[in-house]
Image (cartoon, rainbow, N blue to C red; front, side):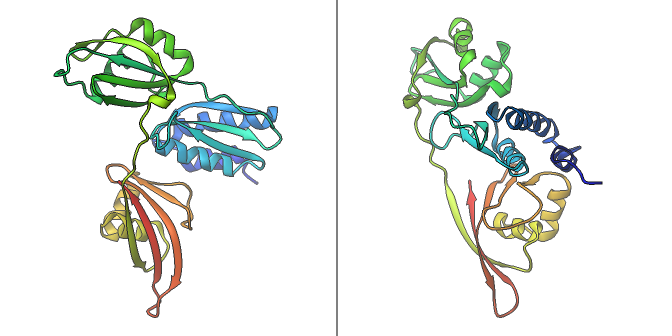
Length: 256
């Protein structure tokens, strides 16, 4: 019996921390395919974005695009777009700026996220949060902006005034990247992870078994991205072929 696209994807993520996200994304992809239009998701973390790419790759004629409101955003919304759709989907992303007067008051990312979620917003409706110079800029799905404007009056110990801001107010995020040139015994995920994250193969295998390490699909090839909780992301940038000793030369980029 041949498994459907849905069954293949959900079987792969079943029992893992990505299962619920995979279900939601497959539902969205199927709706985009059925209507031959597009479907906009909520905000996804980097692992969720990897799942979205896997989903799109398993549906012929479906493309996944991402936008978090500014360049380098960590949390992004995905759009599943059918190849026959010729329109331009609206991303429906807004920025609410919460400002406080006391320059000596320290407000952390945790303070902002806790306060916003304490108002009843789901994590999936909230994108990145930028804090600078007495202002916290909160990226949210557009239909939640008015709710924040009316109800967000305090962050941590600070009383705040909220206003709608422009996406251009968000500072681009500069991602630190370390280039790693290595030789590995094979292209198995544990070998690549060991070389890129600086650990033994046995430790890498253990983390894979504990589901700390996520790969965007089972095979390791150029362009694949590995994500490990607590260590960041690792891109397989280039596979350069075998050395004289029979090992495989690779170029990796580790994003910190």
